[in-house]
Length: 333
Image (cartoon, rainbow, N blue to C red; front, top):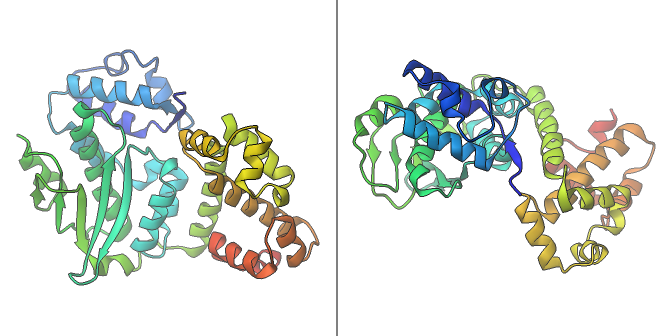
């Protein structure tokens, strides 16, 4: 099933570039069943197939070989809605990057991201692996990502931010000069990983628009959005319904798998195909129910912990603090 999970903001930027080059929306959207009106709506979601077709059309139509870099450089945090506001209001760059990795499904997850720390050399690396899996679009996809990440880092950390260098797995390209022009740092080709390296000191520097209340509020809204995305259809939705009705007796994957007459291995595979997992759904259900009970009932912490399937209140309190950054008691004040 080719689910529609991707926002359209990257496609919108691509279209603006192609229009300057003389192409039009019909050409970019050939074969996608999309229109210019579709991508102008923040509520529109497109499938992986539609995204790949649009990317393929763009690379074929463009007269500029650096269209990927130019596309990424046009993006900023405000293009990302709640996800962007959560990033920019984070206390530090480290917090923002961890959030970006954990909540990347809300953006356009065409890459898998990870953050690596080299304490000895005081270097941080933001590593990215291609998820589109279309060889002819590999370089284009990575170029979009490099430039948009640079744009987002500067939005968060300030105009003085620079990467030390960017390393890419593929061979040198004819438009290599555009890399240094747009990304403003050295580029190393034929490397083992795709990664953007920067000074470790940046990680824990306060972000210029950090706001604890905004960060917490947007994170809660993002949690709800992710839960809706992950459980709106298929087996994930059915599990979500079962858990919500009685999470105490549904917190074991073997029990849930038996309920649906399948093995736990098959269940894990089906959930993975929807971009989620049993543990993700269980955690989201527990969190949503916990907030509901704390804000709308007189149940004690011990009673809430029991209803959510925790062995004791201490484990529940620890989990709640990890989810929200607040104590369970804070939600009752």
